[in-house]
Structures are given as structure tokens and as C-alpha cells.
Image (tube, rainbow, N blue to C red; front, side, top):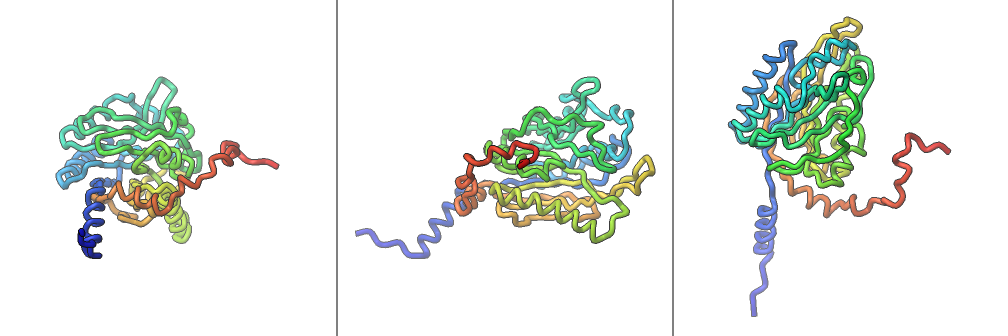
Length: 316
């Protein structure tokens, strides 16, 4: 008659199974203060991508519109000169870096699709330097110092994850982070991680209390997406002060605070709100399945009762 397993033996077997089911992904976060010279910004990014790759990063996430200053503080048609086609010079530049260092890169570019037609586009570049896919920002803000509606046509590619050699990436961009529908649609198509390149900060005249409320709201809403979908979240923001060229405001103080959260919203890492940072976070992608077994939110969705969600507002 076979001997019964002891509690210690059972624990060892469970632990072994858990180890076998782990999928560790090393993610590099690159939080940078940009200047007016795009070539220098790109040089800094190149050096820092190399640094992250040399320390084991497999996926490197860059901030929104990382080649330049955040030009949307003013409405100036001359800023359209910053846009470029995809594929184009920047995808060639970052493609060479991805191939040289054997990493997947999430970049964020000002796309010139046609004369008079421009997008805010995230491009995922595979380890071999090819374009794995792209996502055009869907939600476009139009607020003081964030005049994006002049520059960016809303995306028309929908919300679809991008398959890569290191997993299926749910890439969204900045303002998309306030919309749970976007995160949910990515999760329902098998995204393994939600990624948000970002450019967000305070209007410099805001009180310190208001600044902190805004920064915490920004962090909290994405941690909520992590919990609701049982997925890790990566958000990478720019940092530092950028002047308003018009002089109408005091400029934007980009609050940094790039972070990684696990599938229960737990903070795995949070960067400084004032300094540049280059950091690697190790995320267990397979832990999401265990969390979803505990909290089966997808199972309990009432998909038969959500028809009104597509309305602008439910008027009585």
C-alpha cells in the first residue's frame, strides 16, 4: 500500500508546480526628462536602452512621444513637422537597437499617415528589429496645455493586443488610461500585460494638495484596471519641467512616478516624481491565472445586461 504524502511533501510538490508555472518577464522602465533637441533625446534613449538590455531587460517601455518635448502645450501647425511615417526614421532607429540588444521595445511616435492626417501611435518593435504591431491612441484630450485634438486624429485600429516573442501586449497610450473599457477589451482578447506610455503632469500653478490628488488618481485608476482584469500594469511617464512656449501658463511639471503593479493592484515599483530613472522590474506573468482563479471577474460578468454601455449617456 503506498505511503501517504506528508504535509511537507505536498507543500514541496505544490511549490514545484508553482515554479514550473512561473513566467518571469524582466521589464525595463525608462523615465526621462526631454529637451528641445530630439537627436540628443534619442541618444540618451539609445544609451539607456543598451544599459537596460545589458542588465537583463527583455521588454523596454518608453514614455509617450519620447523623441521630443511635449509640443501639445500650444496649438501651432508648425509642430506637424515633427511627425514622421511608420515605418520611418524612428522605427529604423529603434529597430536597430532592438535587434542589436535582443529586446522588445514599446515606442511612442507622432505618426504622419498622410498630409493633414496624423496620429499618436505606439509601435511595438520585436527583438529582430521588425515592427510587431502598432496602436493608435483612441482617446484624445483637449484641455489647457494638452491641446492634442489639433494634432492627433483618434485611432482607427481599435483595441487589440500585439503578439510578440515575449507575450501578448495590451498597449494603450496616456489618456486611454482613464477608460476601463479600453483595458477590458485588451484583457478579453488575451492581453497578458497592460502597458501605458504616458506624458502627464501638473500645471505649475496648482497647489501641492491638488498636485498630489491628481498624481494619486492617475496611479489609482490604473491599479484598478490591474485588479479588474487580473493583469499586471506598466505605466511609463516623462519627468521634469517643460515651459509653455506661448507663455500663457507656467508650463507643465511632468510628475514621473512611472510604476509597475501586479494583478491584484499591488505596487511592484514606483519611480521618483522628480528624477530620471532607469529600472528593471521582474513580473510573473503567469501569476495572473492564479489571481483570476481566486477572483473570477470575467466569469461573473453579466454580458447579457451591458447593452447600454455603448451609449454616450443613458437618458431617462
